[in-house]
Image (cartoon, rainbow, N blue to C red; front, side):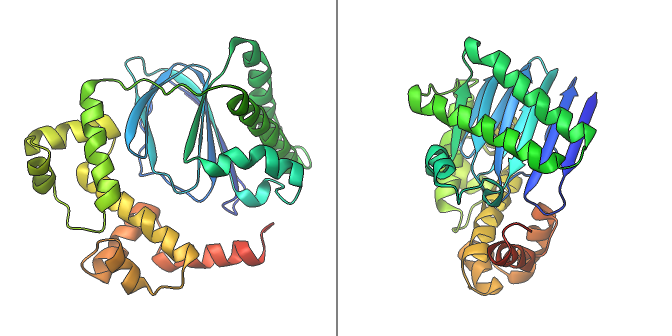
Length: 287
């Protein structure tokens, strides 16, 4: 396995390049940055928001902030991928030309791009230059790498504007069935939810739901419900002045103590960390 990871330490720009025989994303995954996932070789299963899709070599997925997602192995687990996470504050949006071309990113929860044959060499070269900059760490490498990422985003946005986007295939009818249940959770996370309640509502056995929910999404049922609730809580912490106990209740937790425990297990931080981070980005966007 080959692995390269760069984190600027400010939560605004990370780059990860991995070439691996197998990999399951180990943790629940959402963040306040845009994520660009470029599958350079191999095949993966990718769960985003409410459905699982098959991602093939040379596909690019751009995921908006705070959209829950997870990748797992497909039938052939060997793969190579580049992941970039970049915050809006690094996108030079004060430049109107950048803001106009990137506007489509802000209108979608995720975008899937099947790279045409004639563009693959150029995109592979661009990905290689990003990896090289981060590896060599020459003076100004972080800013230079960000300009390369912006080039990648512009190419992707041009492609989206010029072409109709075909949805990726679902791996099986079972995955489609689980997607129905996931959509219900996404819309009713603030209510009481349990494996048995949903199994009864969707006319499946608790065993079926437990087993195939994990297979289709990469999450256990409880992990997913908690992740959706915590994801919504982080948005409220960043965008509102509601007190933590009110946010806990609003997203479906019976007690603020339980909310705090689950929040830290999912995000690695206490709830007020997200309010502090959001406040600092507003007052000092470059950081």
